[in-house]
Length: 353
Image (cartoon, rainbow, N blue to C red):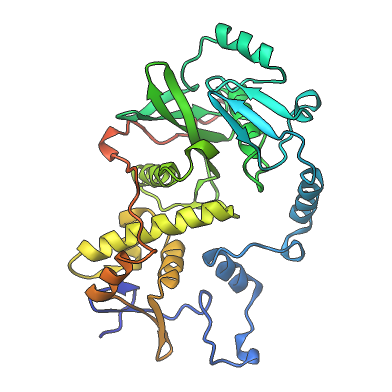
């Protein structure tokens, strides 16, 4: 056992320098456990603690109260998209004449929404789309990914956000889509590319977020698409050479999916790696932020408090036990990085007039 200046993992034992803003020593009394507002913010971010209204700034709190008031009543009970009739979960702010009907009809290609089945049937005969807007950036087998710029396809992206809100509680992006890129996952057959789910990300993020919103449509959940979308977002981060994290708060389903993905990725590396790894090394390999790596290690009970420091204990036996446990769930669908055809977004400076 040895002390190092950076968080390190070895096949036997690793020492993490004291992280007083991340974890707290239960042996300290209350007077010693006072933390600053900044420390609490960092702790909450790492541990994915949702803020209460009292902890939010006045503007955010007001928006949250408005969101709660608006979403108390759900009018649309079902949505028909493609061959699937889906029960909705939450309110979505469709325009009045569409937002207060019991069932909405949505074209699975252009995402246009309609109130009446006869209008929907007529549209199907007229619509020339057979795939999402934008450009295809990934194809392997029957799975494809499409990148859609919110500036280039504003109406399509707005329709996508309205559809997604029917299944997401905390989603406030509906109409301001220009600052975002949308990545649409599809199943491809001889009739076209059928939407399965999507994630969005800011073109230029002031934080480290590589996902702003993520959703797998209900008929395709529990089939591996959620983890596929998460993995794809990290593959893009690897190409960008940055570490990323999803925007908070995550839905309950989102939390489970991300925890499972992070655990799988880290355990795969720790099982096969020979030598010494730091938390920073793991972050550079996976593009997962150091905070999310520490959080995941805590969930797997790999963090111990020893002689005033936080120690991550890793042995071959522990790794094998975790791989056999519920923490390790191999994805049903994996991303093949060699099939990605994508370059990072580059902000074009405005020309001076």
